[in-house]
Amino acid sequence: MTNEPEKMPRGDIATLLAIMARLRDPENGCPWDRQQTFESIAPYTIEEAYEVSEAIANKDMDNLREELGDLLLQVVFHARMAEEAGAFDFAAVVAAITGKMIFRHPHVFGAAHERGQVKEGFWERAKAAERKAKGKSAASGLADVPLALPALTRAEKLQKAAARVGFDWPDAEGVVDKVCEEARELKEAMASGSHDRAEDELGDVLFTLVNLARHLKLDPEKALRRANRKFALRFALVEAMAADRGVRLEDLSGDELDEMWKAAKAARG
Image (cartoon, rainbow, N blue to C red; front, side):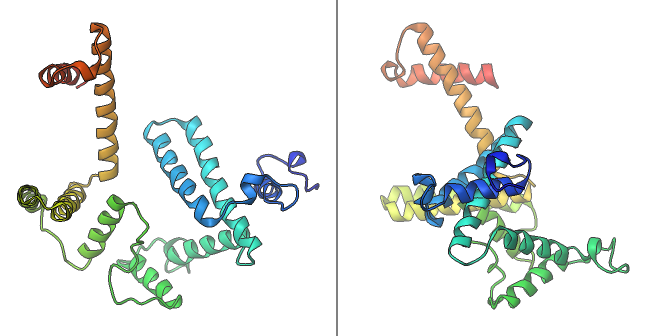
């Protein structure tokens, strides 16, 4: 088989790997691709993951196919740079996740007496064993929660990890009371005029709201994205109302804007 990407099967991962190798070629590659680093590409990796999530939320299978391809390209890009550095290659990435999945699912891939049996706490024990094998300390039950996660996601994972050892509210009602308490403390911080204190208390409010979402079995990120979409739709309707009246939003009074917002809310739900 030829190693020319344009002559290789397009559905073959080898073609994508060959394309990335060509793009990174020091002499004949793409100038932009050649100058990229792990650090410069990382933001694109995160962005592509969010675009995959958006395609799923929109139930757009065509777009999901495209966005999954974009995300796969990010993996290939990082693997190629690692290969150039002599660290590992794409095959090693595949081998690592393959081994991990087999190890963590003995009820599927293990001996006959293990198949079909999901043992209580096995996932946590397996991750602890992996952490020990890598020489990582198991001193904290929160050690496996990555610092680089988006804040909402990390808050939820921290809370779940703490809940596994019983550090949790017994029910959602207790969390609601805590939200109210944190909101009062935020108001006090605002009244004090301290920017640092207000930021601290606002963080507590957000952290507690994530806890409430967890108790309600809701995804806080999904809920916020839903609120964002709702706001954008209502705001677009307010803009349309203003255009129909031949006025600009910035020229309207607060009362007029509030009236139009209520109308948009009633129209959009």
